[in-house]
Image 1: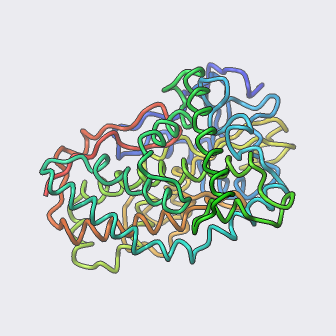
Image 2 (image 1 turned 30 degrees about the vertical axis):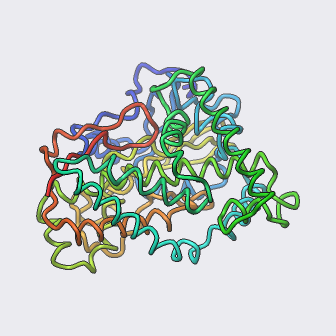
Image 3 (image 1 turned 90 degrees about the vertical axis):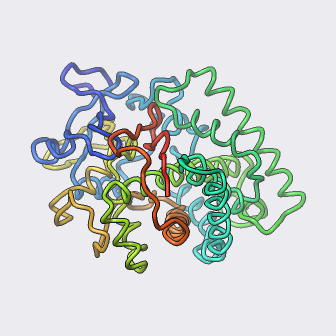
Length: 407
């Protein structure tokens, strides 16, 4: 089978969820019967889907599975020409591999430290409290997504980078075009990304001329690694990736987290009774997410055996971390949400050298906002049945359009 051509046998991917908080039935079926399965992408191209924990973890850590989704013959993930966040190397860091990626990661890692994130926690908590107070003042029912879930991560990543969060509406639109599978046309995407690049280039120039106490200033003044410093193109790409990944995924996760915890009231009550569960509850929510979006695509540079199947060079695979997180081979009672689950080695943030750089910030935001909601709104509840929550559609990240709540 030529994997870049459509196959009548391959089901359309991503799969449909029975409801916004329930996993697609295909995950369990494929884990048991066909752990390496053909799927048809939004572009019409065909790839192979990996659904078991061990296979997903091994592939994400294997350098033979590259991020070169712009390679000749690679399956196109999206319905538009550029492939968005998984496409041309100019649109993301996806094509950085080997020594170049390691050097970039080392440079960014020196600036994006756990110490920096820990120092942000009091400011994140203060902002979360302000957003919740504002939501309460505006009255119930309220949409948790627009009131808290999206503004908080935008503020946090802008604070980290030294970019004004007053531009958050533009960031949201630019992010959506970058993460589009079917929502936007190519002309609209190109125009939006041109604006995004120009905006960030202007900020990079400002940071070089007048550095501040922020990540972008530190990166702009870096004098070691790569070619002596981060080039302007690479610096813009880094800022762009952090802005998009740093607010879009966490914003969606806040809405999904609260919905999962309120969908079964016993979960919320357990956290009210024991706040020490917050940290493990956040990890379990990350593992249990049934609406994560696309997954992680990889392009195979040479022939490899996965789950006893020979995959030829040129194959495109998609790793379903969310399906892997429900694999009974790794997690006892995988289809149950256990707020005290430990250990919890989920692969939500990926694995290997390309694991999510901002996972410490994401965890800090999720733990902090959950703590604030439990403290300020112990009677919080969904204002609609969980089955009526609607997924965000047409993007490579999963989320909920609205989360109506009352208290």
